[in-house]
Image 1 (spheres, helix red, strand yellow):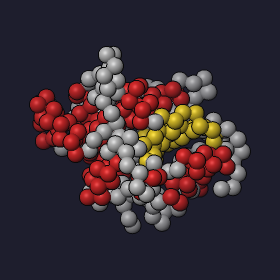
Image 2 (cartoon, rainbow, N blue to C red; image 1 turned 60 degrees about the horizontal axis):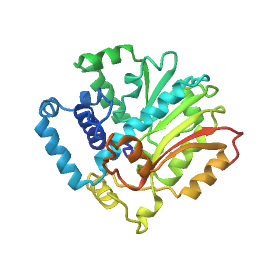
Image 3 (cartoon, rainbow, N blue to C red; image 1 turned 90 degrees about the vertical axis):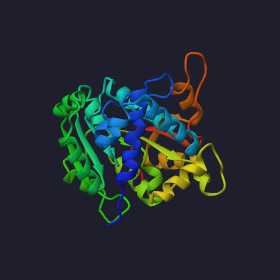
Image 4 (cartoon, rainbow, N blue to C red; image 1 turned 180 degrees about the vertical axis):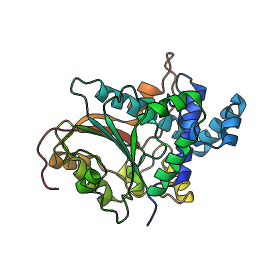
Length: 306
């Protein structure tokens, strides 16, 4: 079975979110106080020194222009989208994180997720590594969140031969009749086009007002389109053995949404992400990647065949 998520990229995302939490600046920051529990003891030690963090930030700024700002801002943006959904009068009854990796939202927002059933779905090896890491937590605040959390871990390979469909989700304990929030963070561009469309088709079978949040790369980065950080992004992931395989055309996304009965509730471009999350009170900002959007969609009609 071909792996869906590899530990290398998951650990790098945890590293970057940890840097953002420890820096806690006006622009370079995250709220992910738990991300460091997935790092080695040695890495946690050296990240306690500010000069080491500054050095890592400087290196990444050269190697991946816009990469760290994007990942940090995206973390906060999706946090906000989830919290907004949880604060609605008609709250969701389930949270499903697809390609969860070392995502920590089911733990950090345990209080807000009270009485909401949570599922994390990823490649079986990734799920096993995460469960082991959660058992070995020593950080006090993270441990507190872990004790309060009740997460259902499910192993699936979206690109492989696993039968990822509604019946499989139900077999894992998901209630197909409950309003649900799906988060697909840092996943779409590692899938094949058919696999991602299948995910949306399955989500479209859930009740009205079910929401899905995901980020995606522009389709034209594969056909000559050049944006801030796009070439370094593709090259670095190729070297890690996790090549970028799928980009989305905006018009095609709109057509797919219409067929499946989704409405677009928010579309955050790189410029909007910079303005909202990467600009300080003096108007100074750092630029994120220039080729990824974050979309939030809501089911509002009967599903039609794709």
